[in-house]
Structures are given as C-alpha cells and as structure tokens.
Amino acid sequence: MAARDSIFFTSGPFIAVETGRRDHATFTSRLAADQALPVATVPVDGLLQTLAAKGLDIGDSVALLGAHTLGVTHCINFLNRLNPQDPRMSPFFSSALKFICRLPSSFNNNITFAPNDLTSLVFDNQYFRDLLARRGLLTVDSEIVTDPRTFEFVSQFAANQSLFFQRFTSAFLQLTRYNVLTGNNGQVRSKCRFLNP
Image (spheres, rainbow, N blue to C red):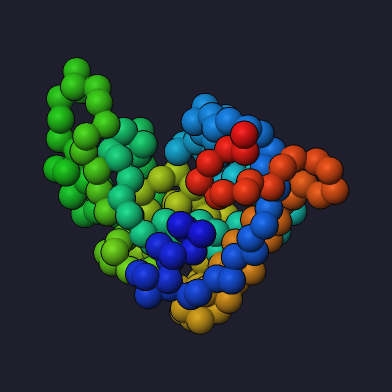
C-alpha cells in the first residue's frame, strides 16, 4: 500500500491493491527481503528469469522497471559502468555522473547518488525516454534498450504514457498476487502493524 500511495501521489496511476493477504512468517528479515530482489548489476537475462519465475512476461518485466522513474540510485550501484565507460551510455551523461560520483576510490561508501531520470519526483514515462537517449544508470537499464526482446516495450512505453500506466498497473497487481497463502496457511493479523499475540 505504501508503494501504491507513492505512485499515486507522484502523479502515477491509482492501483487498487488487494488487501487481506496472509503473512508467511511472524518476523521480518531485511536479509530475506534483499535476497528476493535482483542485485543492482543484474543483466537483462537475470531480471527476466527472476520475474518469469513469478509469472511475469517480458512486457510486464519492462513495465515494472518503469518504477525506476522515481527516486535516486546510489553511485556505488553504477560505478562499474563509468570506469571504463560503458559504450551504451551517452558520453555527456557519463561525464555528468563522474562529476556527481567523484569521491576518491578509497572512500568506499554509499553517500553519493544520482536521480533515476530527469523527472525523478514524478511517476511518468520519462525513464523510458531517458533510456532511448542512452541515459540509463544501471546495467539492465542499458540492456533493455539494446535487447530485441525488450526494446519494443521500451519504445512503446516511451511514446505512450497511458500504455505504460496500464501495463505497470497490471504487472504490479500480478506481482502482489504471487505466492499468496490460502486456507489455514499463514495468519491474518488482527492489527496490521503488530504481530498476533
């Protein structure tokens, strides 16, 4: 629901998220959550395989990547594309990123960042337009423009924001339905913010 509200309050579509889902566990684990997400350097094949295992097709996967239209990415997650410069990245864009991320190599931390696209506070299709201009931050951002399986969707979403919103909404809901517990499996919390006694 937090993702739904973040999308809606930044000019994106309202997604009617289904509630009442049963919990898998009685504890939270940041490690388990991180392991369920693709790493920042994931190539397009790895991303498509991960999301296919959750029932999403190629168009759904590209649409979900459109969530990169919001927020920032820490430099540590794309420094590998700056030195040496990834030829799939615009030289001007690469130079700007090198300036933003100009900490000495011995300063190994995660404090510098760059906006994900030119309108990083608005949920729109700018991410896809930026990709076509070779302004993608992550490896997968550049690969979905050069991969023939995904390029068609990038082009369509860059040209048609309504289509992107429709496909994103569908893929988002499909992802929330993955591995839902039924019957006596799991538990329903009597108060959402607290574990049951």
